[in-house]
Length: 113
Ligand code: FES
Image (tube, rainbow, N blue to C red; front, side, top):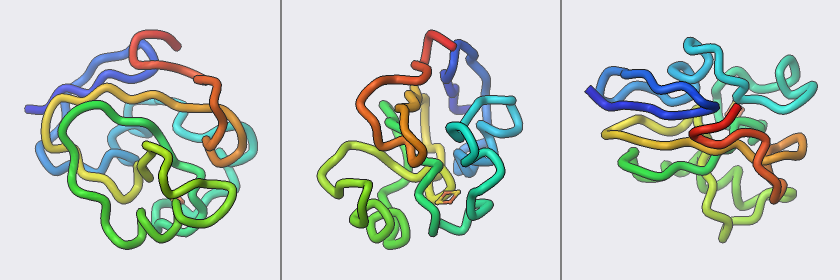
């Protein structure tokens, strides 16, 4: 079973599990500020569930690539949309600041909440 480390917590999930659902089920603060209530609920259009991932996940799908190509995201940035990502192996997750998670300062890291 894959191990997910995020915001100071480590837990397991099923292989292929949706990363957004896994993080929310574990009480991880996936969204910044008012994005907690203003988000697309996982259909890949709002872009606020962006995170940095180290480890084995599914390849970016077209929704992930398309939304992250639009401002304020930058296509070349090494982020992913959690709602469009399946966990394939052990991963570490970092959340950055700003409404869409597009900032440069970590809000939380794998080890620190
Ligand atoms: S929840 Fe909106 S893009 Fe992921």
